[in-house]
Amino acid sequence: MKDILIRIARRLKKNSIWIIALPLILGVLGYLLPSQMEGKSSYAAQITIASGNYDNPLYNNTEEIPLLLKSDSFLKEALPEEKEEYLAEVKEKLVINAESDSLITISYSDREKERTESVLDAISSAFLKKDQALFAKREAVISQSIDALDGENVSEDSKVDKERFLYELKNTKLNVKAASIVDSETVNEASGEGMSPKKKAVLGVLIGVTIAFFFIVIPEFFRESF
Image (cartoon, rainbow, N blue to C red; front, side, top):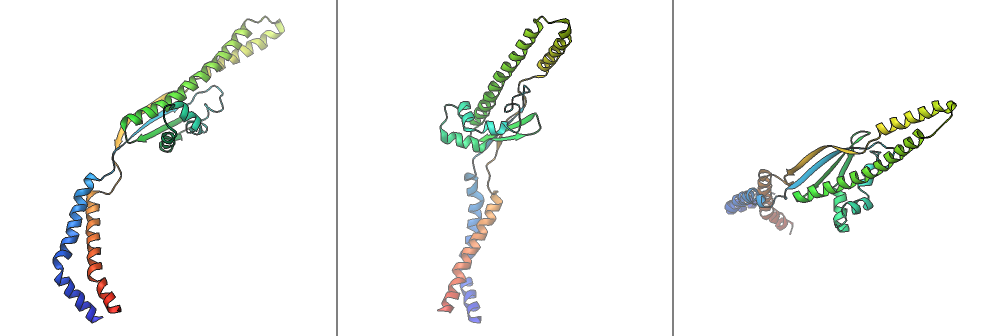
């Protein structure tokens, strides 16, 4: 064992220059080169929508809306010109959270600012367009019912029931509403993930020390074994 230590010490002394230089060189490279190797910036945007209220089990339910917006059929409708591969990527990056019984947030991030804006706008617009159509249909049915009942001639005994039904229908019409945007965040830039230059410099030094260890110490143990 003593002979091994002596030989290692001699090898260290003989190769001291490159043993010291190698970790320093790798450390400097680790500090300088990563600035050109960092991940690309990404962009993120978010929109908050208040769900509608017109007795639709899907479009008025904040627990169902996230499933709807991530469905293949909805994404194809919202982004008809995109290929299936890109739609799969959109589905993966799309984040939808139910904040309450009436609020949902839709978040999306992408490498390109324009992509982030266009995708989020397309998805929210498609949802609001369909929601508005369903709301208008429901409101029209209520209005038709009010007009029909209001113009109906009833007996004196039925007048009280008629007025009650009219009141309920008019009250329903006042309470129904379509979905709407309540808040939207502008597209924000986020730096790509990765180690900082200092951490990569330390990593470079450690790699250099490890390489030096293998070239100086390990050969002596192998020689002793044989």
